[in-house]
Structures are given as C-alpha cells and as structure tokens.
Length: 293
Image 1 (tube, rainbow, N blue to C red):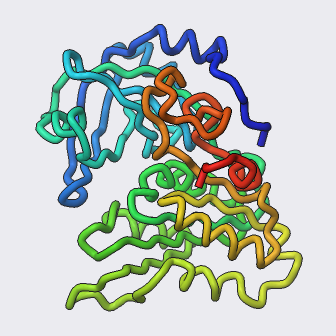
Image 2 (image 1 turned 30 degrees about the vertical axis):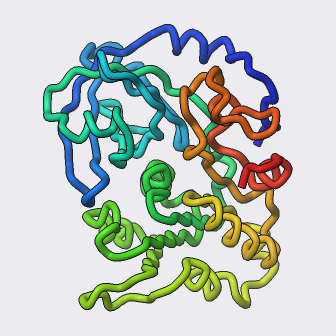
C-alpha cells in the first residue's frame, strides 16, 4: 500500500473523471432492511458502460439532478460491465430522495475515485473479511473478487456482526458464499426470539479462527475490516496481537467522506483528506493518522 497523500490537490486522472458525468439510470431498487436499499445503476451509453471499471474499495459520486450529490462506495463485483450496485442507508436529504426512487430514474455518476483493497497482493494467502453493520456494503466487492478468483486464495473467512437480526444485509448471498468454500460466521448484539446464532461482539467469532494457529498461517494471512471505527480498532488489535502485521490489515474510512474532492474539509484527518488519500488505508497508516479512529 502506498503512503497516504497529504495534500488537497486532486490527481490528474481523478480531476479528469470529476469533469465527466456519466448519464445513468436506476435499473432496480431492492429493499434490504428498513433503512438500507440496494440500487443497481446502469450507465446509459453502451460504450461508456463498457469502458467503465473500478477496483474493490473505490467509490463514485452519485448525483440526483436538482437535489445534490454524495460519495458512495461500490458494492458490486469489479468484473461486472453491465451495472454497478450501491448499498445506501437513508440518513439525510439526498438519501431520503433516493428512498423514493424507482426504476428508470435518471442520475449522474462520476468516478470511480479513491484507493482500493490490494486484492492481487493477497493472492496465495489466507484472507479474513470482517464487517460490522453497514460495513458489509463496501466488503461485498472484495468478497465478489475472492469468489471469482477462489483458487488464488487459501482459507477464506467472512465474519459479520450487526446490532440485531433485522439489520442483516445481503442475506440472499450467504449460501452462495458458503458454496464457494468460504467460511461465514454471523453474530448479533441483540437477538430476537427466532435467532439461533451466536450473540456478542464480532471478536468472539474471530478468536477461534486465529487461536492456536502456527506462525506460517499467521504470516500468510491478510485482513480487510469494514465497519464502525470502534469495531475495526478492536478487531485489528486482536489480529496484531496474534502476529498479523498492521501493513496486512486494510480498513475503509468511507464514513468520513463528504464532498469526494477534499474541498469541504469535512473528511480531513490531520493533514490527510479521506476523499483524496482514501478511503482504503492499511491499519499502520490509520494508527499514524491523528484522530482517524
């Protein structure tokens, strides 16, 4: 992972992408929970659609004409050329408008922008994919990458925790992940009467996976952690205590992004701007960014 960029100048290629808006439309809307929806968005021009590509962990600027725009991480497979998917929580004016959106609504897309999870450097390794709450949304893209290149990874484990069962995302994919020889552990803080799974913090799922593993396993393991900062702080501390280097843990600070250009200064962490240098960082970089978590 390259060192974070400590400035407010957009890279030339990002500037060019910011100047171009893809005309797009909402192809479908799926209700995932009471607050989250999955939007499938398709670029209208076939040639632009064919040329658009992204890497797991990157984001786009989504524009609603006459309403505004905001950055959202891409939640779909990087190999898809037909459309992109955005998992969006209703939590503000723009997302409230989106909650009323229907198929065929026209939108604008700019991007993709930002750093990505270094999936290719993880080839030949064990990989831990750990998410808390809405953190499963940005994690879904690297999961898709792993599925499509399953023979390039050794042991793969997905660990996912939410507040309660009603907030579980992408439940329709759990069996598909398991079929690809991917371990899946799910835990909730507050169970309902129907819940039969484990209860507690996500570290409860992580502990038996790394406990007692030999040095060769630990040194050949990378982790991607997405979720609330307090969650990935405790998870990364446990991973580091087990012997996994901080440089092999990758987190997303997507929650800190605002304008996507580093102009509003609301995404800054010290002298680093998440919109420009992130959202993906290795945990060593995060620990050296004042007030990042």
